[in-house]
Image 1 (cartoon, helix red, strand yellow):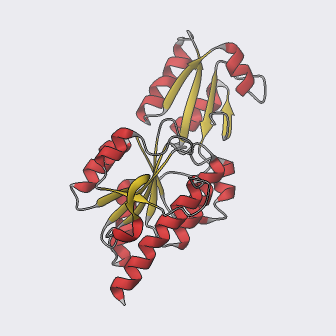
Image 2: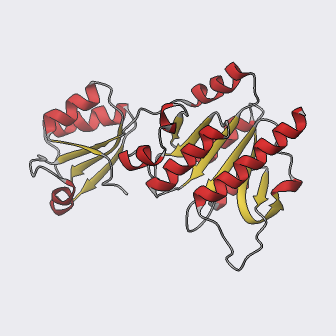
Image 3: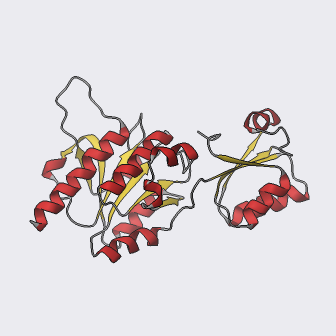
Length: 249
């Protein structure tokens, strides 16, 4: 996951990338390297709240495509991230209650891209992802979105639980996908709502789930007990669409 993305290598290119305002998802620095130019890069990374990983020379060599990393490799996002306010403003401009999709630890870029595509066609006002232990807007995710990334804003936040709490204070409700939850047809998903989709293997984390107002289960009728994360996101998102249309009708 961490080596997927546009790579910037070498001290001057990485420093200029930060200073130009380019969105950097992660910075890899040679462990123990603390000379002046590297400290400057680390300081610039701190201004962007970029995740910094201190790694061995062997790891940097693996990440490097040029062999001339000079102790630093940056992974830039293929697209710039939005702010939470941008997502809420999109809902306000359409005169609709906010409908957001939050992803708790999605690691597969193809799942992220597919969810962005679903978010766009079902009218969600944006997608929120965490900074750590999750895939970002890599080229693979952008490609899988089939262009949706151009229209559906993606915000990246330091802590998903804190973001949920802050948005709840502004009137939003949150439903997380959980096989042991209430059948989605029995929940009221018509108001300002955030759908939380969990990690491909472990689902929604305990802390995030505890901050949600509801747990939504997708009825299962077959022998397999779970759905792919992007498919689950699509099923739940369209239940939101169905309920909103029924309420208007």
